[in-house]
Image 1 (cartoon, one colour):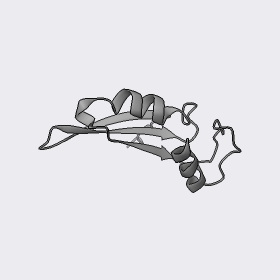
Image 2: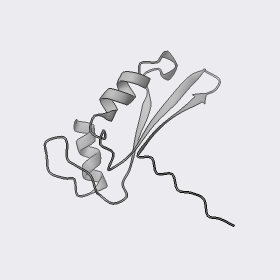
Image 3: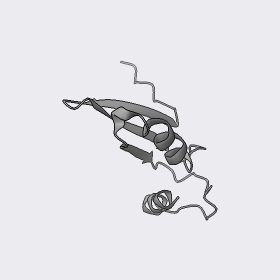
Length: 92
């Protein structure tokens, strides 16, 4: 049996409907090496999906940390741990 082909995209957006209220939950997913990682919360999750009435202003920003191969586009040094990345993304 052939093995499944791995998904190679660095980014994905998923919207899940929530019943019975008719709301939806948007999940913005990024790999730590995605070039838009540092601006995706503001420019994608908040600006595009968080403004939809069905989201009620809520969303999840999920970052997968595989190798630590990321650029520090926030003006700081490269984060050394997932926890450091999390804190800096929250602060940005």
